Image (cartoon, rainbow, N blue to C red; front, side, top):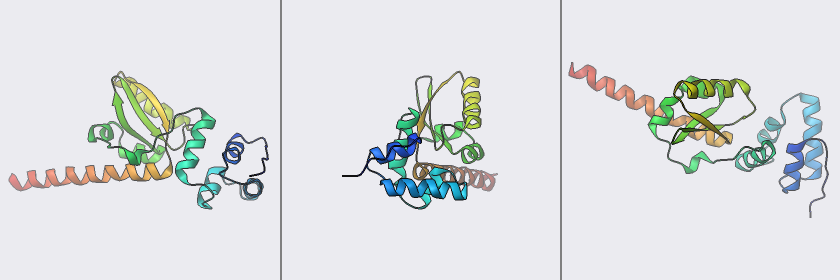
Length: 165
């Protein structure tokens, strides 16, 4: 049984509550954050204290934002084209599906207000509503590679067109 140590950090409290970190790790994370000024997430993930997918699930619970694992999904080209790759990289967000007039967007950091403003603007221009999801850094890295495939395909089509003409 893991000793429960409650503090005033909802994310760490939830991690300890779910048995993903120990009380000792809790204290070590706080000490490291205080001495380094690094974000908690960076410390936890870089030190490999919690699996990135588990961390994203807990973050979603704390923020009351649903979690999704993009590695389990087929992301269609049309969804990638909605958000330019540079914005996706800058804000660590991926448009992964649409459902009716709802745009489904995964964000590594759903508290990034600049990211939220950017996607809300694009959605409004297209008369769409946005549903946000928390994704892990692993999901983001997996999904962002889909842009490379898209870029390659466009390059091949352009190359074939140039040869034709």
